[in-house]
Length: 152
Image (cartoon, rainbow, N blue to C red):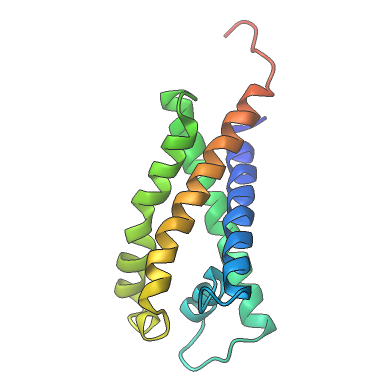
């Protein structure tokens, strides 16, 4: 399997894992928003109501960025090996957390923090770590499924 395809699949599965966990915590009232809400607010003009279209944009953004980061983790594992793939994936997720909640939003759209409460900033840390953990494990599993290359 191609490294980009493998990374995209693993990243999508990682997004589904953290998105499902995030939605459950939101559904039970433990979190005020989901990452999809965050993306919907971030990617739409100020004052745009949260509706089906904006939530769809949020879902698509999650899967696109998750697949992209999955490819980055896949390249990292190709260069460094699959030992501790879960830790390497989680490390990438944790390193991207400040980029995700501080650098990009503040450089592009400072209004996100007027909507995103501090508990969500902390929750994003754990969701990013969960994303990286799952993505690393899936990449490790997918790399074991490939036949050995003869002649390389």
